[in-house]
Image (cartoon, rainbow, N blue to C red; front, side):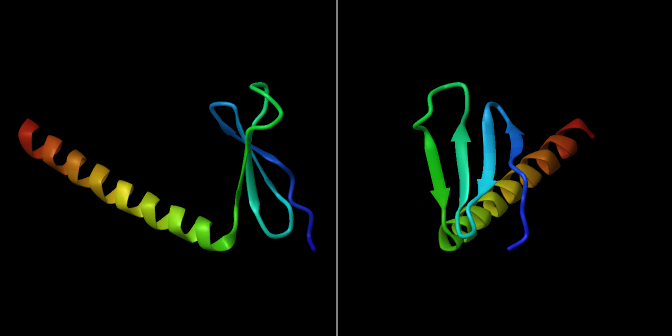
Length: 68
């Protein structure tokens, strides 16, 4: 398996990969706050992100129409 370096995502959240899960942890808060996302959960999170993106696009479009 190819090595993937841990990545800082912002707001104290770090991401790592254990070969199956994407693991999110809050470093600096405590050493026990971890969330391991398996592929199915990650896909569900991606679908949720797309729904949020669509709502934000609609809000931006409505704001633009109001300002015209």
